[in-house]
Structures are given as structure tokens and as C-alpha cells.
Length: 476
Image 1 (cartoon, one colour):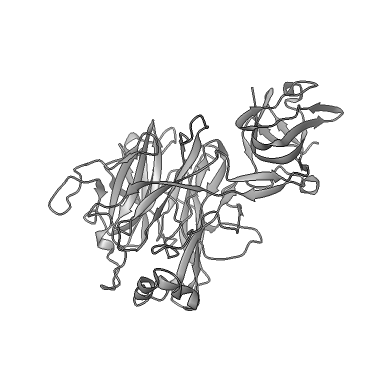
Image 2 (cartoon, rainbow, N blue to C red):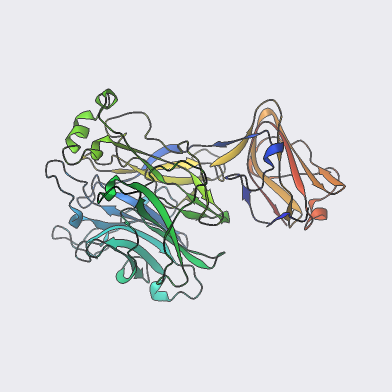
């Protein structure tokens, strides 16, 4: 066991099979889905519109700041993309459920200053605007909040800076090696001690029509947010090479050694078929095709992916989010673009534990005000190991942990159960039968304490019946 994996007391999830001895595991990993909740924000202000998109959320000392673009999408009757009308808007919340759009008095619109716009076309001919709070210890105060946006005048990705997260100024160019025409996500990785940035680009472009190439996601690194490495495509192993749009990459708060992403998948059908005729919004879809065929033939969904190094990603090809049951305004280009950022919110059910909230817009390009809907999922609940009624096994590779308590995020039926065995050399610890549904269940052992194996190579053998396991953690 000299090659045991060190996990210390960090939380481990099952988004990949990094810790799993696959030949000895019969439980099945499954991708879980979001549950739709209420509309969190109605984008019904005159400066917002059906093109409101690219939402990102910044957690900031008990306050959640949200930034997004306000604009009308391409108007089929005008046949142009009016990017000059894009504005960056701001909203905030203390609980992730109730959002306000404060009157900031920063930008004028229609002769009035009472609005939630923080940047407009008087600043630059920009598109997309991603904000993060820089947690690098020596970050200057005037640069504590940073943003990325493309400037269509020079096709560079620019950095904007702010001391308060409200008033931003255009500061410096970052790179021109990319297309950048979606949300370009950046953050300080405190474990790697580097800035990471995930951007949009294309590959396999036929001729000069880059729009006919394959949309991809690339990453780059920096020590100072000024000088960046050459962007590299994300590596998905032997996975299929299909177009990916936004990325929504972010560290997972409860396990910051893991990065999570929610890329939107771009699917452009080759031709109009009777299936399109059957959609409720077929007439408006045909109208958009007068501008460009892909505006009517393209549909989008959302995937789930994770990484431990920022470059190599475990991507699920099955959709994490789909447009849902057909109605007048969905199954269009622009569905399933999730906001960057997750918020731990109070459960709507009395006495139930907190859950994770995510947000995605709907009503894209509908000529109706867009909406931002809240969705929820169990904490750590994106992927789980599932056992049928017939008992199944999970066996790990050898690993080293620290601590004297093992906790699990798990759920069983009334008749289901979970049992845990820790094996180190000739020493074995056996747990009692566990049942219930808990984000933090202490595993009780009958023949010793986990602290006796702390720092020693162990394998964990889990037997489950009609149960799911989401994560585990050793701690003091």
C-alpha cells in the first residue's frame, strides 16, 4: 500500500472514479438532476429584455451579488445584432431566494438614473461580463473585484477592476487568443496558487467561417492576472468531440480541490424537419431563420463535468439539464445556460436540511421579458453511487486519512442500509448498520475507533442495499 492516495480530512465526492477500485465495485454511479423552483428574478425593466443572460453570482460577506447582461436579443424584423444596447445589471440577495435590483444612479437610461445598471455602451463595445472577488492575499484593494469581458473594438479579453463590486473601470488587456463570445470565467485558486481562466474558442474551422467550427472550452493560468499562458483545450479523454458553449467552471466550496463545470451543449440540426413543425414556437423559430438558419435549427442543453487539475475533465454525456416539457418559449438556442455560482439555501420543506440553489434563465429570445428561475439539488448531490435492493459494493483504492470521525452524506429506504468496513493490513473496523437520510451521519464502528487507523493506508469497503452515497469525510 505504498501508493496510497492522501486525502487527509478533505471531503471526497463521487464525481469521478479517482478513489474507486472499479473491478470490486458493483454499485452504479448516477447523475442526479436539478428540481425547478420559483422564478427568482423577472427581467422586466426597460433596459433588460429577452436577451438577459450570462448571470454570475459572487458570495461576499453574507451578501450575494449577481451580475448579468440586460438587452434584447436579435430582432428578426430588424435583422441585426444590436450589441451597442448591452448593459451590465446588478442584483443582490441575503438568502438566495429574495433578490432586489437596487437603484444605483451610475448610468443614465431613457433620461433617468434610477436603475440597476453598472456599465453601459458608453464604457466600451463589450459583450459578456463575469465578476469574481479576488481572494489572493496580496491583491490590491482597488482590484479586489475583477471582471472579464470582450471588447469588440479590438477582440481582446479585458480585465475590469473595482474596489466595491459596483463601480468598475476598464483596466488592462488579458489576451486575444480566443473568441470569448460567452461568459469567460476566472478565479484565484488558493490550492494551486494561480489564477485560472476558462474561455470560449473554436477548432476545426472550415475556411474562414469560424461559426462552422466546433465550439470548445479552453483554460489558461496566470500568477498576476496580467500575463497568461497560451490557452489549451480541455481534455475529455476519449469523449466525443462535440460543441460546448458556456462553461460555468468554479471550485466547489465544500471540496475546493475539485472544480465543477456546467457547460452548455450546442446542437445544430442540419435541416428543418417535421419535428420542428410540431413545436409550439415553430412560427417564431422560422422567423429567426431569416437572419441565419442556425438561429432556428440550434437547440442547447447543459452537461455536468468535474476536474482535479483544471485541465483533465470527467464529463457526463447524459444531460444534466434539458429544456424540459415543450412550451411556446423553449427548445431554442439559449436554453439551459446556468448562472455561475451556487448558494446554500434554506429548504422549502420544514425541518429539512439546507440545499444547493442554482439559477438558469428561461424565455430566451421570446420577445417577452426573460426570467431567472431557481433550481435546487441536494448538497453534494450532483452524482451518487446507487445500490439496488440487492446489496451492492463500493471498494476504494488504498488511501490515507486524518481524523477520528467518519461522516457520510447518504440516504436509504426504510428497509435499505449501509455498512462500512475500514481495512488496514490485518486490522479491520466494522460499522453498525446505518439507515436514514442525512447530509452528515456519523459512522459508528463496533470494534475500534477510526483514529487508530489515521495516517495509515486503508481501503474502505461499503455494502449498501436500496441506498445512495454522495460523499464522505474524515475529520476530528
